[in-house]
Length: 205
Image 1 (cartoon, rainbow, N blue to C red):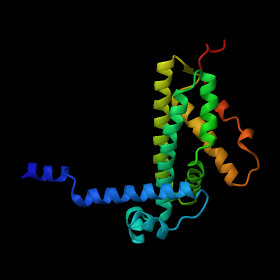
Image 2 (image 1 turned 60 degrees about the horizontal axis):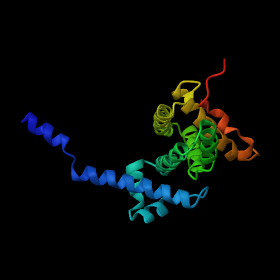
Image 3 (image 1 turned 180 degrees about the horizontal axis):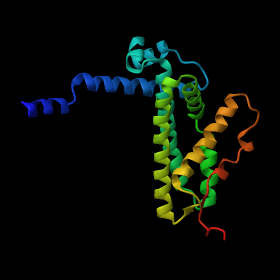
Image 4 (image 1 turned 180 degrees about the vertical axis):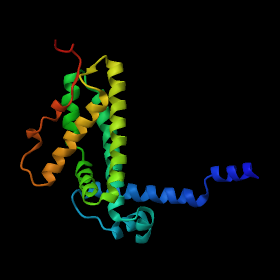
């Protein structure tokens, strides 16, 4: 009897599968709408219509539109970082890696949505754990990517890789938040490449 119960619990039910698929669809559709209309408000009705669902399914699965927007923003960022990693792998040397990565990150279409998600995490504490979960995933993936690149190229970083990843993304996302807050300036005013300490020459004495 106990074994049968355990097997029942371990087997996903159709309802759970449908719920997961619905959540995924809502996140993907919202990420696409935010990418197509950067900076514009996207309503629950628009999201539901684009997903072929009912508006109340947004609140059922996510609790609020803001929660869905946070998930969608970081999904867009995840897609963008895959392209960033390809850019990094193509760099012929460490200097080009720093320069190309910085340029590509500042041009990512997902950055405005992620900046909004960060602001939401500040203004709505109940969503802060969701934001932190996605940020921790971003940091870990970046650290893993850089570790693999350094091993394959024989390059080195001048600080621990977890610090390298956090420092770089904090600089990039902080710059976007400043712009959203009204700070004047352009990408040319930011030395994002300088936030990376990855080199292919010996460390200075």
